[in-house]
Length: 115
Length: 116
Image (tube, rainbow over all chains, first blue to last red; front, side, top):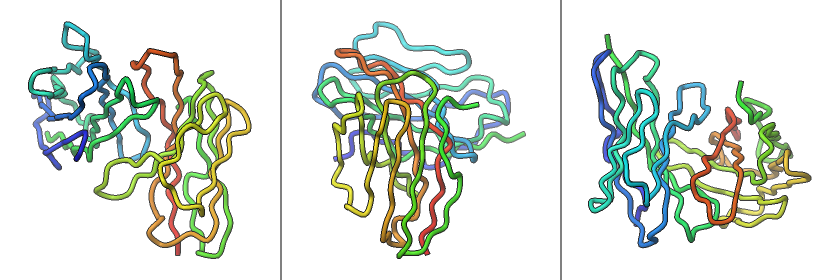
């Protein structure tokens, strides 16, 4: 079974609008962390934001925020005021407390920001 | 500029060649990783080195051979590859602290490998 599911292969958003990228996860470990990465066409994976399973508040980092709904096992990324430079692949990933150092990734969502 | 440097950026090799991918991290991290990224598939973890000791090997074929001579350098030696091994190979590093799961991986730009 997939541990990380991203159901949106592609998304479009108009410049200056907000967009939500979906991520659901599956784990029985009570301790886990969720990460979002951005991958432009250049190939580098850029870390955006982190949410811990015990964090009481949703994580925010500039224009990025994480809509963390623990009971639903979802960790959606919200990008506010989209910019053309936000066009990229976005990956959700999880590290389980009992899973060693590794991150497990979803299949990604291709976001295109339009004028 | 990324704190993780990968060379070469692009590599084309025949199935009988031997080549190596190099990764260097300038972040003082104690763990390094190799991931494979193929089209329309999740990133696949290949190897993890923590404190220069291999701690994970995800059933990777023996034609891929990692080497970690110190905490800053990681190599992936390639020999007799197959066309399906063509992919983007990403190196990453992180600081591992026991009981702490919040440290992100920092990635390099990757090596785009084409096997002909």
